[in-house]
Amino acid sequence: MGIFTMISIGVGLAMDAFAVSICQGLKMIKVNKKYAVIIALFFGVFQAMMPLIGYVIGVQFESYITSIDHWIAFILLGFIGFNMIKESREKEEIDECIYRLDYKELTMMAIATSIDALAVGVAFAFLNVNVLMAVSIIGIITFGLSLIGVLLGHTLGMKFKSNAEMFGGIVLIIIGLKILLEHLNII
Image (cartoon, rainbow, N blue to C red; front, top):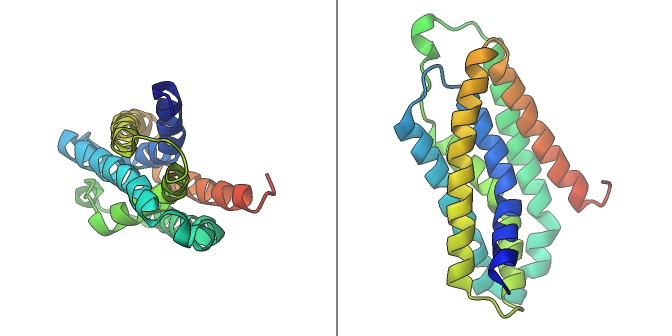
């Protein structure tokens, strides 16, 4: 597998993480570079770990993983999205508008957006792929796009802050629904 193909796979796998990172940035009143890097690291590391795990697992569990990965992503993203919409409707005091990093939520989002990478890793087991190079490329691309996503989301959030969190929740639900519908061959 060539470098261009690996980069293309990395960009394709990173798109969900990029969109979710935008949602995280939308919630920030003031951009926190440390949080932006942590968010990007979560997505980059999970996106790199999943194909490595998939590669190790190989064909043994392929049918089990691919048969439910879309449901797991849909449920996790839908749950987080509905919570964001609910929180956007609640009145908050000014002091409570400061963004706080929720590691449990971040972990769920990182898992949900990287489940497809697990299946890619299983495919790598059947191809002539330098797995360490592939997962490094996937992780670096996801990290970079996620960092850009957080910063872009913050910029958009400052312009449209009244409905930014609700919009972010809707986007997460749509991404989860898209993953589900694609895997059910509806779209």
